[in-house]
Structures are given as C-alpha cells and as structure tokens.
Image 1 (cartoon, rainbow, N blue to C red):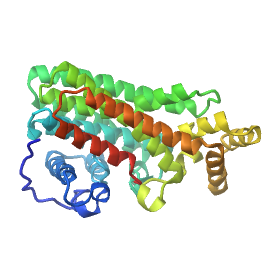
Image 2 (image 1 turned 90 degrees about the horizontal axis):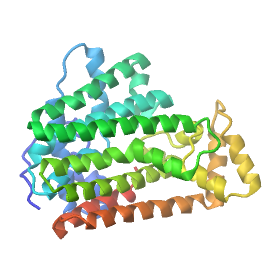
Image 3 (image 1 turned 90 degrees about the vertical axis):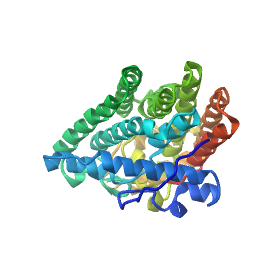
Image 4 (image 1 turned 30 degrees about the vertical axis):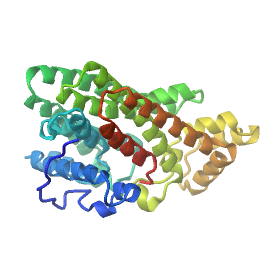
Length: 357
C-alpha cells in the first residue's frame, strides 16, 4: 500500500495528535503499520478543521465546531480513507467523502443525545446541555445538510453513486433510531429485531463509509459490495462491544456515562440474552428493573449488571462480538485486495474489538 507524506501541522483540534497515547499504539506498538492509521487520522482532522471554518450565526455553527472538536476514534472517515487507498485510489480524493461521513455521524450523535437526554459525549457536556435543545436540533439539521454538500466536489457519476448510497444509509440510520426508541416501551423485542436495529443505526454507516472509499478508487462492484459486507459486520460487532462497554466499561476511559443504557431501559443484547438465559426469579427482577427509572439509578444499574453476569449474558455477548468480527474478516477475504492491504484492515478491525474506550 502506498502512503502519502505527512507534513501537516496538527493543531489542538486534533484528537489523535500523539500516537503514543492512541488506541492503536496500545494494541500494536510504536513500530508497526498501524502508525499509518494514526497518520490517516491526523491528516483527516487537519482537513476537517480547514473545511469546517463555518460562519454566522455563531449559535448555529459554534455547536457544530464543538461536537466535531470533541474528538472520538474517527473510525468511519479513517475507514473511508484506508479503503480508497487500499483499492489504489488517492487519499486526497477520498477526503470529502470521509468528511461527509464524519459530519453525518456527528449530526446523528447530537440528535441521539437529545433523544436520550444524555449529559455527556466523549467526556464533555453534550450540545443540548451546553447550549439548549432547540440549538441542538437546529445545529444537527445544519450538519446533515453540510454532509451532502461535501459530495458536490466529485464528478457527476461519482456524485450520483455517493449520494444514492448516502441517502439509503441516512434513511436506514433514522429507521434504526426509531426502532431503538420503540424498543424502550416494548417487552417483546427479539434478538433478531435488536440486531436489525443496530445494523441500521450503526453498522450501515460504517459499511457505507468503506464502500465510498471503494467508489472513489473505482473498485469493481464485486469488491465494493464485499467491502460493504466487511464494514456492515464489523459495525454490528462494534455496536455490541459498545453495548458491553456501556455496562462494564471504565468511566475514566469510556467517554460516556457508564450504565446509561440501563438507566434508559434500553433492550440491549445483554438484556435480551439475560431474559433468555436467566432464572425465572432473575427474569422477573430484570423486567421490574426495566420498568422503573429511579432518580438515583446507582442501585438499579448494579443489580442489572449482576443479572447480566450471573445469567451468562456477558459471555454470550462476547461470543456474538467474535462471530460478527469473523464474518467481517470472511467478507474481507472475498475482495481482490493485496494480502498486505487486507491485513491492515483486519488489524484495524481487531483493534476496535479489543478497545476499552
């Protein structure tokens, strides 16, 4: 794989400026190909800052700058850039597609935080907490529109392919969010329904991010579809891992309120597997705990986590994470990518599944 030189000055806006502190360094060490992933990230963040110097009114655009500047793993845009280059494309040609994906992702986070009434995002106040709900809604809407504008820099044929995929993906994300909301008041949610919800809410955007990289590089339809399947399955595994970390992650590193899903009575894979495998008494206890929202949720969260562990749901969730990760790697193997490029993407997938943040 050919890589560009990296001469950009990384500003304080960069969330990944120092590789030694990154997830990639912890997983792979300082002298591996994963250095390149950190460099993708730094290049993208520099481009993001340069392309999002937004104007007035301040109360519309400042929240946009704020949420984009909070950092995060930048997984989706990195995957767009990696995929484009893996298929022989130029990284600079994929930057606007990567930026569209990241802008859309952060739009969805702003609105998701409002719907969940979440106080924290990446360890900082959420947009609606720092400003107000109306500002959060409007700034989020602006981000959705801005994400489409980045595709206008592509030739007509590429623009058509990109926007067709992006519109399909955006609608699926909304459908996934609605399923998520509906599940809060349903007691009959099944595991297949839950997996469909997280596929739409989370993994289709990962899949689309990778397919956009393939489109930019003019990969074959077979390869573009295979890399989409890699991203889709990796995205499901990623969300299952996120669900696990929401319950059992370290508050110092997770970046969100640990136990938030339990507080909001969200039917996660952990919850559904617990209902399937727990004793009758624990099933009844879990159903009761998910019917209440006490002012102080500390005892509720701990009681639910105990049922998760004792029922075997934690191990079942880890098994599902492994299985979807393997499905992703099987799809990757079907592409015509050089083995070295496949290996880099596979290593990136492994790092996501082993993360604690």
